[in-house]
Length: 262
Image (cartoon, rainbow, N blue to C red):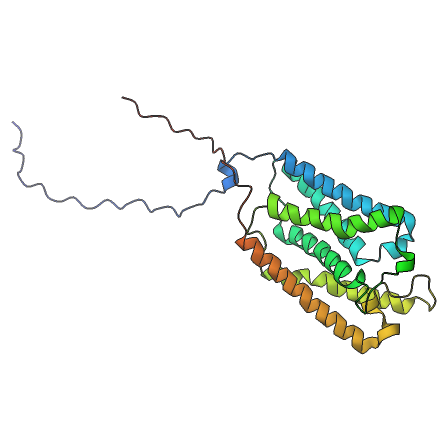
């Protein structure tokens, strides 16, 4: 004989629930298959070769210590190294280089191009270094054109057409100014160490020539140029966040939705 089943079953104590695990975002690289970009790699490799070739031509035609002291040459060497590394990553479907590094290389070659075309190559400016009677010709003219026009244009096209936007940040702009400040100190110290009458002059740029303008004018020029460089860096960051993404592609995640059965 069994006991009767009670009509009202008392409430059982609540079972403590399992604590919810905190969300753990999965990086896109763990789900999205890496994509090789051979055309991007080829363009960046060509840019690196152009920059390296322009520097090589200048080194063969001039004094290596003097050539390597120019801001344009140092910026071109940095760009060649950065674009070569970026080309390898694009070819092997690896993550791109940090935006702080690629942005610095871009900024420096753009600065070199603007200073050359707006101040040094314009005979109407007080800092012009263009002598109509001794204009560069042949290989020297070709190397000069590559470093000051072709390479900066290629770097800008790479940034606009082959690089995802939003990778540059305003906090990086002040860090990018460390190299121009260090170059200013290097240029002034180099000029003080060289003897008067050194071939080519003690100072590499007319707006940094203390013998011709004095320390007060030189520091004023440096401050004005520094502010202009910082404004250019801010402009690049702003444009990087406003420009469209031209390399967006459909990423394969490895998951495929099947049509419903029935």
